[in-house]
Image (cartoon, rainbow, N blue to C red):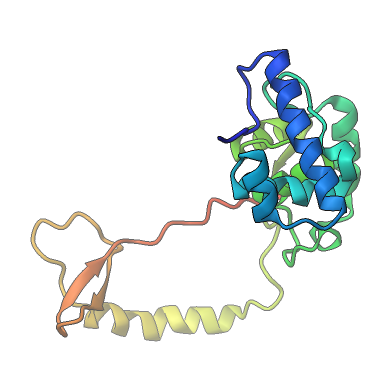
Amino acid sequence: MRYPEGGGVTAERRAFREKIRLQAGRRFAVGERTAVIAKDLRVSVRSVERWRRAWREGGLEALHSAGPANSPTVTDAQFTVLEEELVKGPAAHGFEDQRWTLVQVQSVIRRRFRVSLSVATVWRLLKRHGWSWQAPSRRALERDEHAVELWKREVWPRVKASRRPMGAGSSSSCAVRRCDSRGGERPSPPTCRSREVELRAA
């Protein structure tokens, strides 16, 4: 029998689940194995593993019930703290990127406030507080305009001329071709741009 977190349960049921988690927490403290705890408490091993992670981070307090489940949200006070974290930059939170993405902000919110928001909700939250998409304001300094023009004028016409004609009825002008296992060719679907977005404060 499993005792997942979630809404739609009575106060008595929440209290019962909390009691199970706290029993597990006390057994974590004495070093009992996850499989043994799961069997004795009649819960899944995955649930016990999740509780153990929470216990390691916050002790028994982290295993207490959070109360009735509501739509997750970030309060104005929490957003003030979030902005302070965002100003520090992604590197301060262990990310290699130099610009924030929605998924990264989502991760910071989850770690900092223990609130799980969808990517769409994160975007609405940021937009409501004056954040916007971040686009480069100028071309990269490394860009060699002469080399670009040379490529357009001399290389691209040869590449374009050597391309095989598309099959009849094809509506995609950006499809590429790749070899299959039999040595023939098959069209590959055009790649999609990443849904990761870069953000900046307005």
